[in-house]
Image (cartoon, rainbow, N blue to C red):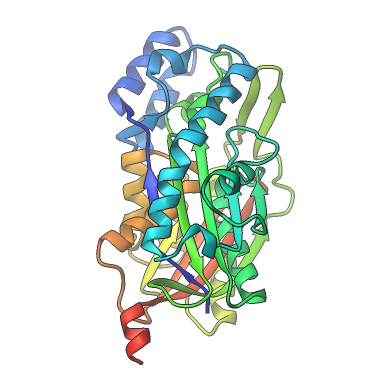
Length: 355
C-alpha cells in the first residue's frame, strides 16, 4: 500500500507576532467602527507568530496584482526546491523515482504550473505526470494526499510527490475592511511543504481509504473575488460552524472502514482556527489533546492554508511518530465547503521489512 512519508516544511524568515498584528490593526484602522470586535477575534485565534515572504512594510504596500504575482513566482522558485530535496531524502528516493507531482497553491498563479519548472530543473523524468490544483484553498493539502493515494492505487509501484506553496501575505488587500478580512489579516501565514507518497516501502502513514464531501449550498462561504488588484478573500461568519455537519461525515468514512472515528490513535487535520479544533473535539467526542499537532501549527505559523496538514503531520513524525499499525485520520477543509479525508495506519519500514 501507498505510504505517506515525512513531510518537509519551510517558513519564510520574516516574522510578525500577535502583538505586532494587533498594533498594526489599531494604527491602520483606528476609526473602524468594528475594530474592537476584529481585535478580539484576532486575539482568539491563538496565533502567536506568523512568517511572511516580505518584510511587513513591503507586505502592507500594494504594488498591483502583476508585481505581487511576480513575487509569488520568484519566491516559489527560490523556496520550493529545498523542501522537495528534503522530502525526497526523507523518503529515500531520487527525483527520477517520482512518477507524478501534485502541486497545490491558492495564493498565486503560474501557467505552466511550477510542476513544469520543477521537472526541467530538478532531475525529474520528462514522463512525470503533473497535477496542479489551484482552487481548493485550505482543503488542497488533504486533496493532494488523496490524489496521490488514488494514483498509487492505480499504479502500485508508482511514487508521488506532493508540494504545497502558500504565500497568503501576497493576498493582503488594504482596502478590504470587513471584519472577516481584518480577521484574515491576523490569521494567515506563509509556508512551503513537500512530502512523498511511496507506492512500496517507507515509514509513515500507510493510506487505506479516502473520501471527499461538499456541504451543499456553501460555495460562497469561502471564496475569492478576483479583481484588478488581485485575490480578495471572502469569509462568511458561518464558516466556523461547519464542523457540526462535517463530523458525521468523518464518522461515516471511518465506519465504512470498520473503525470508530472517536477511537483512533492520531488525528492530523487542517487548523483553520481554534473553533475548528474545539468543535471536532466536541462532536467526535475526543480529547482536545488529540489535535495538539494541528494546534501547534496554528499557534506558531498561523493558517498556512494547504500546507497545514503537512506541517501537522511533520510534527507527529518529529515527536517520534505513532506505534506500528496505529490507526489515524487526516483531513483538510476549505472552499466549497469541502472536506478531503483520509484514513491510514502508521507503518514503520523496519518492522515491515522484518515481517
